[in-house]
Image (cartoon, rainbow, N blue to C red; front, side, top):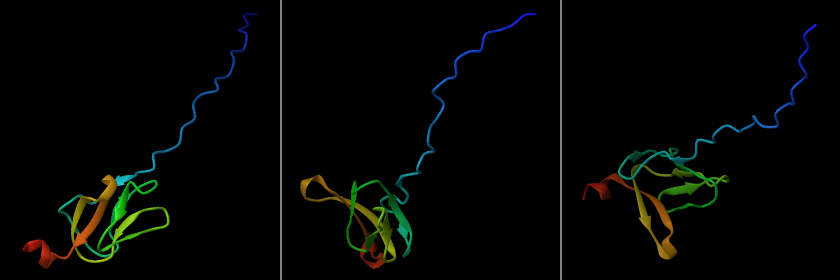
Length: 89
Protein backbone atom coordinates (compact mmCIF):
# COMPACT_ATOMS: atom_id res chain seq x y z
CA UNK A 1 0.00 0.00 0.00
CA UNK A 2 1.71 3.14 -1.25
CA UNK A 3 0.91 6.19 0.85
CA UNK A 4 1.89 9.83 0.51
CA UNK A 5 2.13 12.06 3.56
CA UNK A 6 -0.21 15.08 3.34
CA UNK A 7 1.50 18.32 2.27
CA UNK A 8 1.04 21.53 4.25
CA UNK A 9 -1.55 24.01 3.06
CA UNK A 10 -0.38 27.27 1.54
CA UNK A 11 -1.22 30.53 3.33
CA UNK A 12 -1.04 32.57 0.13
CA UNK A 13 -3.49 32.89 -2.72
CA UNK A 14 -5.65 35.89 -1.73
CA UNK A 15 -5.93 39.23 -3.48
CA UNK A 16 -8.57 41.90 -3.94
CA UNK A 17 -9.87 43.02 -7.32
CA UNK A 18 -8.54 46.28 -8.76
CA UNK A 19 -10.66 49.35 -7.96
CA UNK A 20 -10.64 50.90 -11.48
CA UNK A 21 -9.36 54.25 -10.25
CA UNK A 22 -7.82 57.00 -12.35
CA UNK A 23 -8.62 59.70 -14.88
CA UNK A 24 -11.72 58.87 -16.95
CA UNK A 25 -11.87 62.06 -19.06
CA UNK A 26 -8.58 63.69 -20.09
CA UNK A 27 -7.77 67.33 -20.78
CA UNK A 28 -9.50 68.63 -23.90
CA UNK A 29 -12.26 66.02 -23.86
CA UNK A 30 -15.90 67.15 -23.73
CA UNK A 31 -17.87 66.52 -20.53
CA UNK A 32 -21.60 66.76 -19.93
CA UNK A 33 -23.15 67.23 -16.46
CA UNK A 34 -22.80 64.05 -14.42
CA UNK A 35 -19.79 62.67 -16.31
CA UNK A 36 -17.15 61.19 -14.00
CA UNK A 37 -13.80 62.86 -14.70
CA UNK A 38 -11.53 61.28 -12.03
CA UNK A 39 -11.98 58.37 -9.62
CA UNK A 40 -9.46 58.67 -6.79
CA UNK A 41 -8.59 57.79 -3.21
CA UNK A 42 -8.14 61.07 -1.35
CA UNK A 43 -7.69 64.41 -3.10
CA UNK A 44 -4.95 63.74 -5.65
CA UNK A 45 -6.88 66.20 -7.85
CA UNK A 46 -9.05 69.03 -6.52
CA UNK A 47 -12.38 70.27 -7.94
CA UNK A 48 -12.15 73.50 -9.92
CA UNK A 49 -14.77 75.49 -11.81
CA UNK A 50 -17.71 73.44 -13.10
CA UNK A 51 -16.62 70.32 -11.19
CA UNK A 52 -18.12 68.70 -8.09
CA UNK A 53 -16.61 66.24 -5.62
CA UNK A 54 -18.45 63.16 -4.34
CA UNK A 55 -18.08 61.73 -0.85
CA UNK A 56 -15.55 59.18 -2.15
CA UNK A 57 -13.52 62.10 -3.69
CA UNK A 58 -14.76 61.31 -7.21
CA UNK A 59 -14.66 64.39 -9.44
CA UNK A 60 -17.61 64.88 -11.78
CA UNK A 61 -18.81 67.52 -14.25
CA UNK A 62 -21.47 70.02 -13.13
CA UNK A 63 -21.60 71.86 -16.47
CA UNK A 64 -21.03 71.07 -20.13
CA UNK A 65 -17.64 71.93 -21.62
CA UNK A 66 -14.02 70.88 -22.05
CA UNK A 67 -12.02 69.28 -19.25
CA UNK A 68 -8.84 71.12 -18.20
CA UNK A 69 -6.15 70.13 -15.70
CA UNK A 70 -4.13 72.95 -14.09
CA UNK A 71 -1.56 73.25 -11.32
CA UNK A 72 -2.38 75.60 -8.45
CA UNK A 73 -0.69 76.67 -5.24
CA UNK A 74 1.46 74.08 -3.43
CA UNK A 75 1.54 72.01 -6.64
CA UNK A 76 -2.12 71.07 -6.32
CA UNK A 77 -3.80 69.71 -9.44
CA UNK A 78 -7.17 71.30 -10.20
CA UNK A 79 -9.72 69.87 -12.64
CA UNK A 80 -12.14 72.31 -14.28
CA UNK A 81 -14.78 72.20 -16.99
CA UNK A 82 -14.58 75.26 -19.28
CA UNK A 83 -17.78 76.17 -21.17
CA UNK A 84 -17.57 75.47 -24.91
CA UNK A 85 -17.86 79.16 -25.92
CA UNK A 86 -14.79 80.00 -23.78
CA UNK A 87 -12.85 76.98 -25.04
CA UNK A 88 -13.41 78.02 -28.71
CA UNK A 89 -11.90 81.49 -28.19
